[in-house]
Image 1: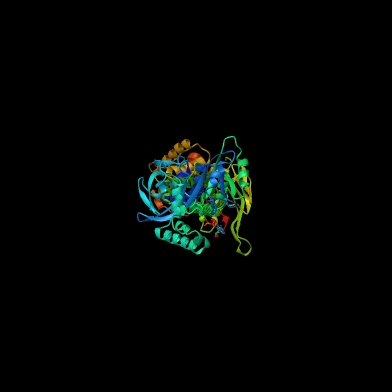
Image 2: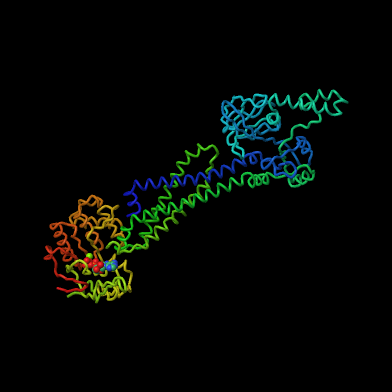
Length: 403
Length: 228
Ligand SMILES: Nc1ncnc2c1ncn2[C@@H]1O[C@H](COP(=O)(O)OP(=O)(O)O)[C@@H](O)[C@H]1O
Ligand SMILES: [Mg+2]
């Protein structure tokens, strides 16, 4: 005869209520772990997907994920000439926040080195890759844009040609992939008025300088499009990705590039580690600590619940002691109830989480190993929590029945 | 006469110490044989419950010893064995209140006492039902204590006390909460158990109307056993 279950059945209402409470608490613990996992996963999804052998970034910076990195776009060509390099592509990335369809649309603009890179490596769930040099984009599902929808960015209208899933920046914004020229245009081309002002300022500078008087044609050039001004460099890129030929030694290639003096080189793994040690690190630790705190609180609350359940049974415990029950009967009663409470709470946490976590704006990633670890923690908490109740039960004297 | 089931040898019990000292038992000695049903009488505060809880191995005497079936089990504060094991194998308790476990049904309340004593669950259930039948409450087997009358509860409690066929049954004012008629029925039940099962039964009671069912009366006053 199982006393634990019979007691629970008798107090079903209050036990159910308590279990739901513990379940909600565990759901938060579970969710916190999922937010942590999602944060790391979102932060590294792009690096992992691109899977470049080397990341070439601005000299002495930690790369575009950690800080601002600017490299001349021409580096892409120079890198192709390095022995052992099979491919190099510019990496252009920046985040914009615009009004679209009456809402604030925040997206991380990623430039693809079109036509070599059409986005075939992206996890497309609808539409196609970038087939044209201009005005197409592949948007992540999280941006809420539909296939064929068009949006105004700067001076141009762009049309959604493909939809990806799970392409999120480290800040949690959905990514949108453009050709790198378009991406740079979106970054650099302001509205008409500021362009006019910029051109006028350029003309004025040339006009005021000696060279403008010696070569009046320059004044006209300066007032035109920036692409027609030979002394203005094309806009910089954030990084250049390098793929090394099979058989070539990436370390050797990296040493060659590092010797140039205007670039730093990282492997994908290093770039990933820098990212996790940098911008993501504090959020990660913050969530980690909070989760630890929640686990401690859950343990205390469970201990109190189990203790109270034991107090409710002090008379019955004294009675079975009087009848000569061994301690294991009493320990079993309390421990089984604690474990059941933990197990049911965990199940409720999981079931509710399945639905509720989907509503979160950022990804809550519940992984198998994390679930397993939490299950272990819950068992640990249950055993620990029953300790207080068992301690109380062991101190109950059989004689208390008589008084 | 056969060997007594329980023997009290010069039991003394002092509660508290120094200036709060209270002598509840002043050297009580007596024995009860199997098949004998004994009434323990006396005014409130005489020390009856104290004596019973010492015989039941629940409270340690200050001095003196308890012998069960010829084996000394308690000598002063010293325990000469596993008290809980002796309790579950040899002693059955009945109290003024039935003290049934509220979350168990009537039959389960009896069954649990048997399972505590290592009887397999199925066998325990069968025998528990038999016992309820013996005590005339078989029809209440699957009811919880709150659904039973005081008299029915007390019968379940007696069934529980009989669960492991104890040699010694200790009852402390078991009929105090029952009316005269039902009280007498319970006392007759004790006599029947003693006579039919050969148990030594000691019943503390105030109820003088049912004294005729007992084989012997022990009178207590102010911690002293008068005998009868
Ligand atoms: N746990 C205790 N601590 C102190 N004094 C007690 C305790 N139990 C009983 N007493 C005292 O011992 C005396 C005998 O009590 P008790 O055995 O309960 O008497 P009875 O059952 O005959 O009424 C009483 O004076 C009572 O106050
Ligand atoms: Mg008393």
